[in-house]
Length: 422
Ligand SMILES: Cc1cc2nc3c(=O)[nH]c(=O)nc-3n(C[C@H](O)[C@H](O)[C@H](O)COP(=O)(O)O)c2cc1C
Image 1 (cartoon, rainbow, N blue to C red):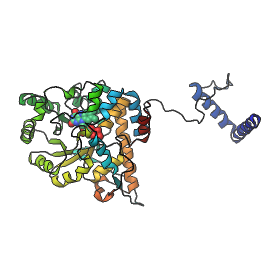
Image 2: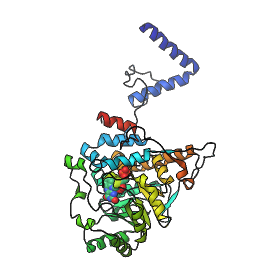
Image 3: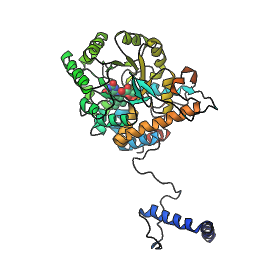
Image 4: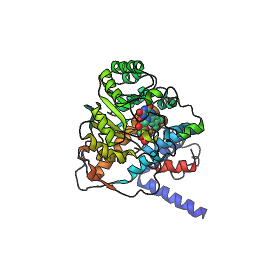
C-alpha cells in the first residue's frame, strides 16, 4: 500500500515537471518559502527535506488582523475580550427579550429579488442633514466602551468612519474628549448627549460641542433610567455609566429639547424614539432627525424590535424630519431592510465595539468596508441600482428560522459561543 502510494506520488511529480519544468521548480521553491518563511537560495537544492506540514489540506491561516468577512471580526473580538467585557458589549437588559427581538424582527423579513437588471453600477450614497455619506451606515454612539478596548476610542472611530466616507456619533463618555474626536477629522461629526448635571452643566457641554465644530446634537431620550444589565451586575464589571446622579437624565422632558436646540444652535437629533406618538412630539419639539432605537436592547426589556417600529415612526414623521435607525444590525442585508422601511442611514453599536476590539481603528474601517461590500452584493442580487429605489415592496414577512440569537447573523461565532471555545 505504502509502495503504491509513493509510486502514485512520483507519477504526479513527474507529470507536473513534464508540463512545465520551470513552473515545477518555482512551485517547489514557493512551497519551501511558505514553510520556512524565507526564500530558497537561488540554484541551491534544499538542504533538508521539507518539514511535514501541520496543514495537510493546504489551507493557509490568514495573518492576524486580516478580515475578509464580518464573522472574522466578530470571532477575533470574541477571542480577545475577557468574558465580562464581552457580556457587557453583547448583552441586554433583564431577560434580554428586546435584544433578541431586534434580531428576530430583522430575521422575520425576507428580501425580494428581480433579475436581469444591469447592476454594474450601484449608488449607495445617502445624506444626513445635508452631509453626503458614501455608505448608509455609521458608527452609533457607544460611550465609554470604546476606551475599554482602545486607548483613544473617539478619535479612532472618527478617523475610521471618515476614511470610509461616513460620519460618526461621538458619545458624551467617549475618551479622551469630545474636542479630540472632532479635531481628528475634517468631516463633521455628531455629538450625542447624556445629561449628567443641571442646566449650567448642560450649557458648558453644549458650548464645547458648538466650539468644537460638530454638525449636530443628538440627545438620547430612552435612557431616563439606566437599564438593568444583569450580566454586568453578576460579573461585577465596573460600568461608570450606571453611576453618578441619574436624576438629571430622568427629569428630561420635551421642553428641554427645545431649549437645548436653541442654546446649541445646531440641528437636533432625538435618539431612542420607538412610537408614532413620540415621533410626532419629537418633530413638534424641533427634532430635525428622529432616530429609531431601543439602545440595542439595553434599556426597556420586552420592548418591540427596532425594525418593528420603524414603519410607524416613518409614517408619523411624514417627511418633516429625517429618520435614522439602529438595533441588531450585523449584516448588509439588515441595513437594506431598514432602508426599505424608510431609514436614511443605519447605525451599528455592538458591531462597532467588536470591530474596535478586534482590530482597532483599522478594524473599524474594515468593518465599514465589508458592510459596503455586503450592501452592494445584496442590492446587486436584488436587481437594485440605487438605494433610492428601496421601499417596503422589497420585503416580505416570513417565519423566523429557529430561535433568533443576538449572534445568529454569524454562524461561526454562534458555534464558538455554543462550544464556549475562544
Ligand atoms: C457598549 C455600548 C455602549 C453604548 N453607549 C451608548 C451611549 O453612550 N449613548 C447612546 O446613545 N447609546 C449608546 N449605546 C446604544 C447604541 O448607540 C445603539 O443604539 C445600539 O448599540 C444599536 O444596537 P446594536 O448594538 O444592536 O447595533 C451603546 C451600546 C453599546 C453596545
